[in-house]
Length: 275
Image (cartoon, rainbow, N blue to C red; front, side, top):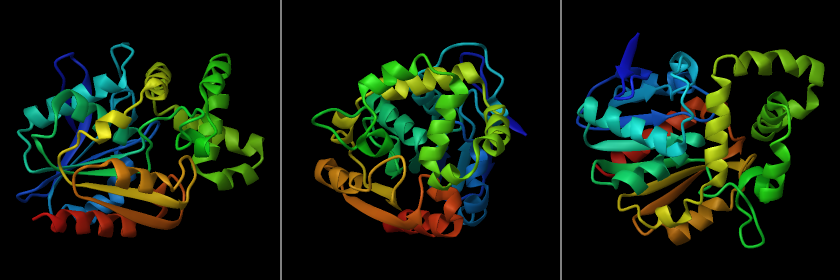
């Protein structure tokens, strides 16, 4: 097992697999871990140097110093990994919260170290309002909902998120769902999850999208789950660099694990597009 020690003293678990002129960094989502990429990386490591890691408070990086990290914190962690491992020719892939890390990295550090970006099923703004309907829970989650959620039990909030990400979970009785969801939460640090969730919900990264200067590919689920498929068209209108969208039919927000073979194939296509 390999750990990268940050300047703060935090240790992040990471895997460095494969080799080649290009580097592929794949970042996971909220409550997930590097393991979501375990199957795709078996294919992709033959085409690029692949870096997968656990964000602080997640998976093998669960042990934390007790800080309350924000999305900017995770972007700083990413920058330290890029600098510390001397990574170059980077294709930066972020799924869900990982895409939020991409937005914050671009805002804080620009695109000079990047070759291209892959965003996977993520909105630049989670809170919806009268003018924005492409946020969390298919455009229905508002500031009022966030304020109301502040008083809820954390397990209840996570259950709502899990059912939104995987709609078929609605059919499972609550007493049967409780144990696997609690086991999933146990792989993460709860305080970190709360802090990052709050940070994501208050961010508006729409202006950052227009500041991306490298090619962008957007992977999205159809019919969608947490976020509307219409985000693909919004990105097309607002990304100023070369852009393409890839649909994952009959998928949920968990498109990486729903169809790992298609995911690996589509990432492979992106890697070869700009060589």
